[in-house]
Image (cartoon, rainbow, N blue to C red; front, side, top):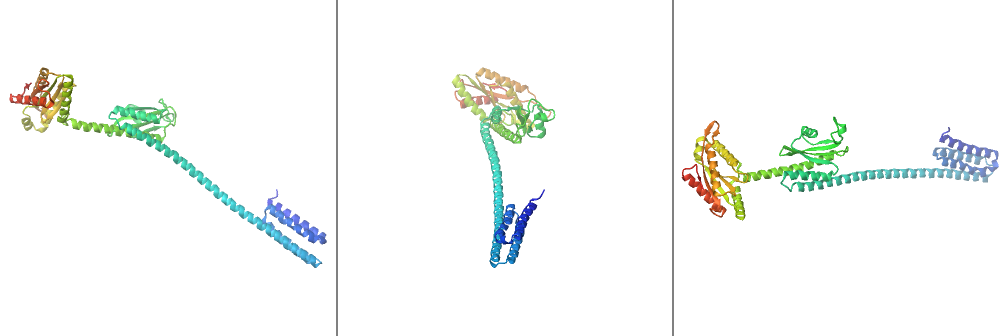
Length: 436
């Protein structure tokens, strides 16, 4: 197979040599045949071979000058020289035109490549923007859902309601998955893995894991730690593989964190409320809580026309007991007495530490006689109790004052004053007795 270069060369030589042969054979036709040398340049231009074009330009010009020098007439020589100049100029013009077209084509190709590069850059930017837009939209949806969940979870003080709202919020985000909150630390394989990992667990396809199956294909389990103690675990599972991805695991962690904060807030509020309403030593209600409850019970008793009994009592010679056995023994004594009062009281009764060694009991719907009898039972129970502290066996007695609404008086402050006066009557009467 001949190369393109050889085909161009053979064609050029054929035209050139053919014309030379004709010129030598018919010298008189020289002025008419010489312009046909332009066929060489047209052929090389058609073949786009600038190198051969330059070579044959020299050969054609040389042939023209040789033919002009051999011409017998001056007019013929001048014509041949003019034709030689014309053919040379045409050859040079074709070469220049071809080079200019090549430069323009090269420039156009460069511009086209630059445009292609810009298009690729724009497509890459567009793809990146679309990915950013999708990611931003997903993040906006997550933040919107988390905001709604935070508002919902933070608006209740019931731990059970927090769990129900957590499940509801996750069901809105993952409507086709099964979601539940597991209380405590159940014997669940994923829960055990979460405990071992000290964090959430993601399962993309249970069949690809050791001992796969388990009634689901993909799952997420996240712990609920309340004040750094395990409260439970939230579990999502689905029958389809690959439903949950690391982004979903992080999202579930955020939902679990919101629930944890809500539960911690509930516990902190309960703790603050307990501190405000319960005595830290005896765990009984405080003086302030007793006063509030007394107001409520008197109003309730007045509306329902039911009696209300109040028992005021304190430990006899408590200061002497403290001086003899020490304040830790006195604290132990008060806690033990608080336990006796709570055990003896009904669920509807209200037992409070009124102050120091003094206690108060509200008995709704109880008249004077049963109240005095109840106080006598407590007095006997305390008198029989052996208070053993650090190996020391001790004993104490208590005095009681009983008042009843509305027999004794009709206002909270007055019924409390009557009960307090009767307590001091019991003390002045020799202690270890009930005055009602």
